[in-house]
Image (tube, rainbow, N blue to C red; front, side):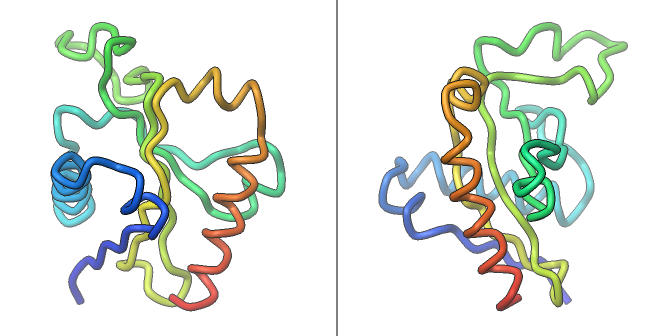
Length: 132
């Protein structure tokens, strides 16, 4: 079975369509092949707060002006961080079905200011997982 990528309605309505299409293509390539596009960094689940960690909500660091030394020969993926995050989850019954929930610029400052948005995205992830 192939990879399916869905985009959350709120993201579709609020993000530049051509940029969203480009990011979606890169995400699909990454999930199909396991090969990280050059603008994708560390890909990890959220581990705080606990309610978010329990939702299987993940984020990929997207290269931006805060991405230092990504082109260095010895750079490890773990250190490929940025201040822009692509936030997603995958289905429980269909692990090849993904939902891209959001893309956040200035993510670290945003997370420090409020965890409400993360909790909202965790609820979206749980709803998606009940259906997929």
